[in-house]
Image (cartoon, rainbow, N blue to C red; front, side, top):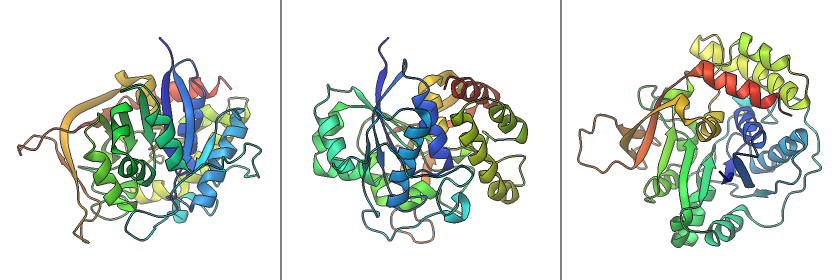
Length: 313
């Protein structure tokens, strides 16, 4: 089968960075048409740089990187340096990348690339706030027809939230954009905290990655070791959740995940529960099922996949 054409929309972030590495390790299965950066974990000037750093480290300077939205559609911007560090990718050596930043705005790239594609042919993989995707849909709703699937990281049901008691960071960062994307009518697969909190980067798993003799694995192990310091204390767990790579792992090995068709609605009005993902897991309403909610994962299989693919570099 030909490689699946994908666009990764991200806000690196250590876990976004690992998701990029996983995608770039698998060119036979995934054709990365471009990487679009959005403000999120850290400001846009850092997320676009960090995406280009990953291209350099992985030896994939052929992949184009585009800078997008600097702030949410409506609300004030939030960020998460307290988790990711001042660079967003603390734990590895950060440098000025050779991979250039494209002059075209990320939203214009999405409009052009998706708009000119065949119907239902492009898979979007957002691992940060959904501002760029929503802005493209607002600018030209017809591009929706050419989207095959949107596989995203965000939201929570039983796990509550990681930024507020009700909301996961990516959704809270731009709930209005999320509402637009969840209402677009295209197939959605949603990796929320209910599944990503089961994918823990334990010391043993990180050590296996560290023992791989290449620059990508060294960068990954360093970032995961830094990432370790906050979430393990917060969750009292043996390692931090590795959120964003679940999206790419799903594209490569969907059999590792358990999904259920659900209706998911986004809270955009209440300040108390802003950004909450209301997952109708048991279909107690008559609202249409609009997403595949991912609720379980073979965590050992996930890390076997990640370790094997990082060893390819």
